[in-house]
Length: 330
Ligand code: NDP
Image (cartoon, rainbow, N blue to C red):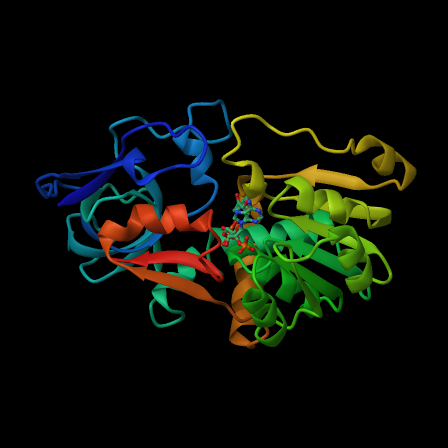
């Protein structure tokens, strides 16, 4: 029973050597428990924060203990009345091939309604993050312009599509031309900007958003965001969802001050964590499932095969190797 532990707390960019593989006996199921076989593993940028021991909104991973993340698992044996053999469940579970669980925090997922992996993406935390961040903080109005950074990733692709459903102009920022093409052809974005090849990002954003930026959904932070901020409109809203460009920094770089434009333009800038909306998750899930069923939402996944490749799939997030949600199929 392979298990992946946190071996070191990374300094800067995480490495393969920060993870350790061990082999344990498959646990026995006791009364009230289920035995789970891991099927799909979510790897997510926020996990970089949990690899360090800095104080945060979620507990750090412990050294030499299993790493955990969102996982879809199959119940292969049950001594818990709420679950039967063959059920699929989603939960925060350890990076183990097999594990027992008391079921208290597992959610059953329906393989007939959507592909199982979708419960880690569009019908999971990712979809909810896009939905609540955009609608509750961004509050986009018909005809407004939304700019999304990290646009070709799991959250970004969904944010852009919700923006289109809400009749906005949507501009995506991503790391390759191929991703930009995908944003336009598959996800209906109006324009895309490749931050790796564009010299003057501030001008490129001004060109792609001729009426200025009303809502900026920020997944990356750093200099990309500085250039979007330079184009923000009066009463604009900045949704600070993530800052992946800073997650591996050993010191936070200084950027332009935000106070002058926040004041001059009466801009709202708000960070959030998806847990803030936990009491509204059913509303979000309903909306996302309806849009998915009505084919108003599309989704992309990068599926990496094999338990042994979980750490590399995580590391690849920082190299932009994924389009849409990065998932490991075990
Ligand atoms: P993604 O699927 O977007 O994967 C990460 C992407 O980030 C990569 O594909 C890459 O695309 C881009 N990227 C990597 N390094 C950099 C860099 N240095 N500068 C700019 N872009 C970079 O991940 P998610 O959709 O799961 O998450 C997106 C963001 O949302 C993350 O910052 C994450 O932490 C945050 N998040 C926040 C939540 C919350 O509750 N607030 C919940 C979930 C996610 P490219 O090729 O374009 O560079």
